[in-house]
Figure: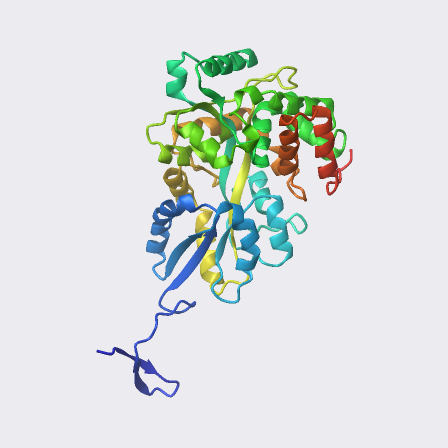
Length: 421
């Protein structure tokens, strides 16, 4: 039987009409907001996270739409410009990659709309326009970098988390002799090698002191301390998987979660997916000990802001989208995010629900270092992390550290101008 709904005309006449489609526009019965993301693995988690928001905003439904990570930045500009059906809220890469979206007018400024008065300015910097200084995203995660390790393998091999470089290499030698890959990493993905360098090489080049000197122009990437730090990382090749430059990122992850590798230099963002993949995996974490010749005589926990959520300037539901990102700046969202996805929330006052993440975050707060190739040198083409990773790829193939440093300097100097002083 055909259903009808009543329609009142401008003159007050009541008519019977075929069943009305539910409205998805502001002022209608219900608005569906599409949230675009590069993390398909978080789909089920976000359904739980958004449920309290939907309950407190009964006229808004949130749809999480993930796109493959490797395709996201290519697809995002087109998605933002869609006349209809485009995303309302989008996940944004931090620092440099957000700038082209801002200059194209694809993101709505959040200043005066979202309360970030209690936030650390260095956290907000990841989501600000380089030119206008306006805020275009609500940062959602902090990431720390350290060496994750398989506790069972360490116990079976009677290895303790190393506190000196000699202890670290001795542990690697013992694991290799036992037929276990000491360090699982991807040499095929430049950005992964750049993370390895930050973990193992930051103490050697001097941490934040070097980053400040490079920003001001007092030093550059041909500096002997920097090239020596590249060499520290490249000399770990005997402990990496065989034919490491052909090992893809997912393969490196699997090598660790399957128990075939004892250690995984990486970010805190891996903890949640690793434990989902293998719930029996017991993961520990330690900071790489100071490398030989280190300019910093204690271990460093490096970190950075991972990304933010912004509002599509062309959204058909901008008012409702702004309500969602306002909520994303609250402790309620932050704690849900931290607990559900096992991540470190960027929202002030939120504590990691996972003890391992609490440990690494505390390390960053007490003896932290900025991941300079993302935070300081991530605003041009090529990105600092990509240029550094490519230089390390060449080193794994036999290129000298000095030549690798020249390659990094050449790429970054193509767009970076020192601040002087």
